[in-house]
Amino acid sequence: MYKPHSTRFVVLAAGGLQITMRLAFMKKAEKTMVTIADKIRAMAQKGMPRADIARRLGKRYQHVRNVLEHDKKRAAKEIAKQSNGSLDSLKSQKIRIGPDGRVVIPASFREALKLNEGDALFARIEDGEIHLLTPKAAAQRAKAVVRRFVPEGVSLVDELIEDRRREARREAERG
Figure 1 (spheres, rainbow, N blue to C red):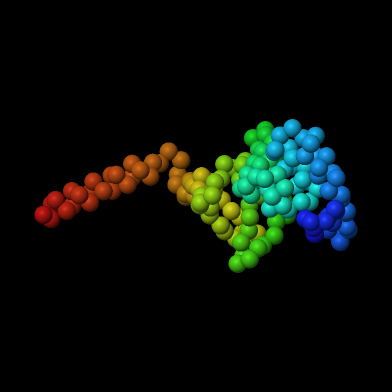
Figure 2: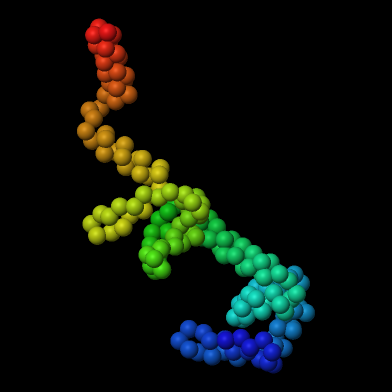
């Protein structure tokens, strides 16, 4: 936990390990770092909460948040670039179910599939697994299923049009 008014603060790391850092580091970082963004990154890396970083640097909280969130997005884009458009390197990743059964799709997956907030996905259960499909992937699967039952060289569109024309002729004859 960070103690803003003391000469040092304590960061509780994973497993309860305590790391004590002197505020002298913060003062040194503030003087040696050139840009505000670099200072924000350095302080965040040392475990200082965003609100305290903003207060210390005299910046708005939103500025601090934007710098740190932009770095996350940049890292996700780098992962997507490294995969060279291939999704093979993004095969699996452990995620957790949150409140109300919510699941967050990792940023690297969203970037690779070009998914944005509000986009629709199709979910299905197959062999005890949950599969999420983009609309494009769902359409491709649907086409594959239909193709299994339609002989090659047969156009369903042409058959539908011909069927509608026959119905129209019958209605005209009854007329």
